[in-house]
Length: 185
Image 1 (cartoon, one colour):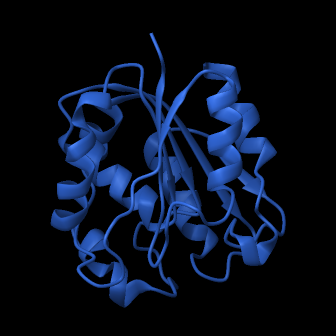
Image 2 (tube, one colour):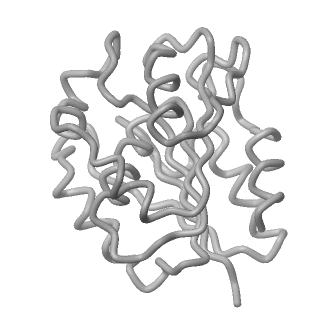
């Protein structure tokens, strides 16, 4: 059976940015089916509109699925896991805001952040969690990564001087993330 892997972009993001194309190519080379949806952003950026897009891929959501969320994409992944009827294989969170300020795009991201997270439901709907954050992220303070990893009962993978893990910070490739994914494939 082919493993389905999703990569979810963040605010003002798109499927061909940052390290997404590189990771997609590497994972497809390993025989994975990689899906990188385009979500409405920043206009019409609501949890409801993102769920409408994501649920088009429902047939690819199985107990063997891996989902990677970058920035607000990771926040959306948390919201998905709160309501999922499927326990996925793994969730990878990269530079994810969960409400700890400062968050540069808090106003546009607020609808995803304003309600408390149901950590018990999130943990029930995924087998393995990985949380990456940088010590110098200019968009999402490191407190978000610290609290996220604490709430998921996993060790924070703190990467020195990685910024927001985006192209501006030099992240057109992400070997550490690929290495972690390969270990669970």
